[in-house]
Amino acid sequence: TIIGNDRKLLFENIIKPEKINIAISKAFQKDKIFINYFEHFYDIARPPFNNELLAQIHWSPDSIYTVSINDNNTYSLSFDKAGIYFVTIEENSRDGVALFVFDSTYPDIANPNQMLQPLRYLTSYQVFANLEKQADVRKSVESFWLEIEKDADKARRKIKKFYTRVKYANIFFTSYKEGWRTDRGMVYIVYGKPGIVYKSAHEEIWTYGFDKQHNSVDFKFKYVENPFTDNDFQLIRISSYKNSWHKAVD
Image (cartoon, rainbow, N blue to C red):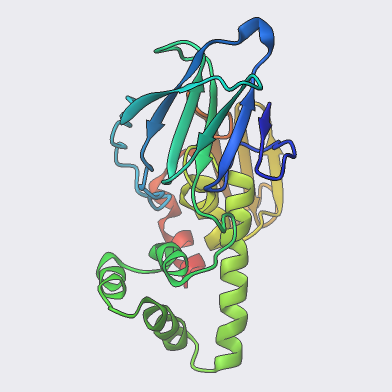
């Protein structure tokens, strides 16, 4: 049981940078619990036609510390930095609960840096590098959108549409990293909501266009076993997505 600052139960494992209490059934209570801390995994999804092998994720914690039980038989945790906090009652155990700390405003997009990062899906490496090195991030983001759409009102509508997709990607596709960084988040941000979705425990197929038509595009996502989440799905990448991807980005 996880209890927030307002003493209400928390049913999500995405936690704000705050203090929480964890209550464990008396049958499993210990003098202390173990917190395995992992820094953020900052990689973002590669384009769907890029089928290079992914770098192997290093699952060893960056640090481990303990939290002792309180007089009221709970464990108080404070989060001072973003990352994954994997809570176990036994040292080196793979049985536990993962708590994700991203940002105080998550899943909303509330500051210029949060607005900048998802633009990587719409730009070349060089263009994005130029955007990143600008001293004024807000101005850099604004200039990007105004260059795409000279009319300020139309630019605002495009901005709202794009960042609404980013927010929904965070809501629905968060796994061990922010939803917008995942494969499903990438496809949703660039292509929008799929017309047809087939789902099972181990697979999702998203169809854009009419089902089984020659000009439709299907994306297949396979479930990936992950020590922290059951919401990790990886896109099956194929080179034939390239033309469709560039059209969608445009």
